[in-house]
Length: 94
Image (cartoon, rainbow, N blue to C red; front, side, top):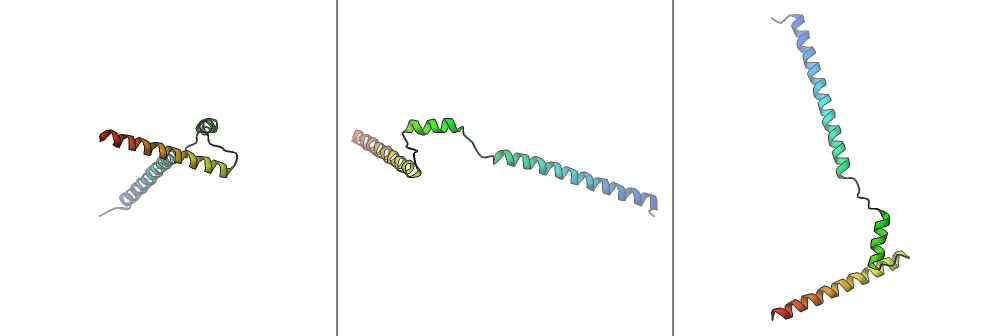
């Protein structure tokens, strides 16, 4: 039969095990939080290098509309260049 003293010892061991388990779960959750914060950190580029890149591409940034229009024009130019290169390749195959 179980005496009062051994029953108390088992209950105490269970409590310490539960506290240890909760503490371990808290540490794992905290490490997971840190990893997610690093993984989903927004990518920030240096605005100076970004502006330099835009200027090198010849995009007018005076207004939103002019930036959109010059970007569309650049994309159309690139598309036309790729189409001409593709047609040159098909001509070479014949």
